Amino acid sequence: MIPAELRETHAGLRDFLTLPYAELEDLNLRAKQQRKERVTAQQMQQQRLEYLTDEKRIKAVTVLFSDLEGRLHMLDYDKKFLLKNSDNLTFDGSSIRGFTPQRESDLRLVLDWSAFYWAPADIFGPGKVLVFANVIDRDGSPFAGDVRGMLKKLSTDYYETSGYTLNAANEIEGFLFQGLDAARSYHQTGKFEYVNTGGYYHSLPGDPLRTFIDKVAELLRAMGFENEKDHPEVAPSQFEINYGYGEVVAAADQIQLYKLICRQVAIKLGMTASFIPKPVVGVNGSGMHTNVSVSKDGKNLFWDAAGEEKLGRFAWQFVDRILSHGEDICLVFNPSVNAYRRLDPHFEAPNQIKASPVDRGSMIRIPIGNENSARIEVRSVSPDANPYMVMLAVFKTGLEGSVSDAKDLRQANRYLPDNIYAALSNFRGSPWTSELLGDDVKTRYAVLKQASADRCPRLLGTFVKAQEVQYHHEVYNQYLWNLF
Image (cartoon, rainbow, N blue to C red):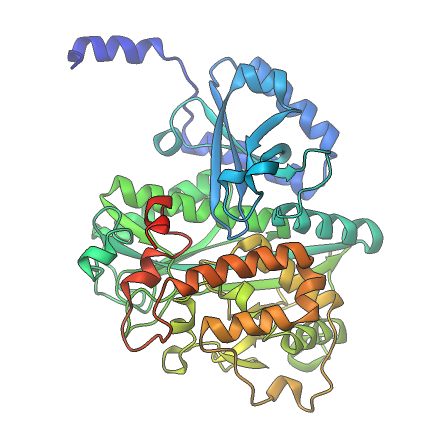
């Protein structure tokens, strides 16, 4: 053990970047504005590389990318190494489930310098910055399994060809449970323990849930999320923290950071933040309500003061296409065995394939809006879904999907699947999901979901089974997976 006086000496030698939260917020908001203004990739790369070269207190760059199921992966590159090799960052794709077989393992990361964040040192460590990356194949072409890259291409293509900006914001619910690794030990304990039983909006200052929410909100603010409100949710120990609208790729990146920050804060408090959709039966599950709109030249194309529910024809066509493909893309929105417990009509479940301004059981809700805020809310998304795949499905379907000839489509008496096997069947049999993802990625994704489902009891029953938590894609580790 190092004596206290030596520890202090060592700490003094480590002159790594540690910035106050207010300064972090200012830097991250400026970077966010550059992203909104679509500063060119070449300009962003030049600025960031110059900054990294000049800022001697940065020791490492944390590069983030996501796999096919939406799990976030992080690699720390030494800053000096990255400055010399930023155009050739390779990694072993065969170690990422759903990416490449062992015989074709090498993949490369292309840094998206517009998605650059200054990180709070008390969570990520001093001397680190974050940047998201897309994945490319050996030959330099976009890697088919990188859904973030697919989403970025969709967003860029619509902006360049039609002038459209695809906008999104998400309301992400989760649970805070007692103890570290509560989900990974569920197969041994058989239960989750609440940290708070106050319910909707009710949590006293200083209690564990309120302390957690306050800390997460501070971190989100420092990272430029532009917070709106935060509160406990309906179920005991459930939380939600809302933040501002953004361009669709940035919005999906923020979902990944939001969940990462929640988990890190929970760990520091000796607790577990879980985004499993329905970890406890008998109470409301967690959703990820996805609010979307399309704008052009600063004008909200969904708004029409004289339209039905103040939405114009463009918006209602968008809605009709999503409703028409509701069964096809349900597996994208609800990717786990457990997610189908949430689609329970007794708990405000959005399982009806219809649109409504008031009925929270509808797949799509039309919130009250004005010229700036008019939007649609896709409510049937679970918080464990791959955010890039969700956004891709919502916007590509809304803009390019077909419309069913069913009468009264928006009020039709149709329901989303109530189990993953039915969702898998719909997904596999749908020509639209092949167009959405490509046959190769569609097959890989379905294989992953089938394997997870096969590790669980076939019938959901009335209580959460150990396997649906143990083999959940956000919970399992390779050791447990290989025991099957």
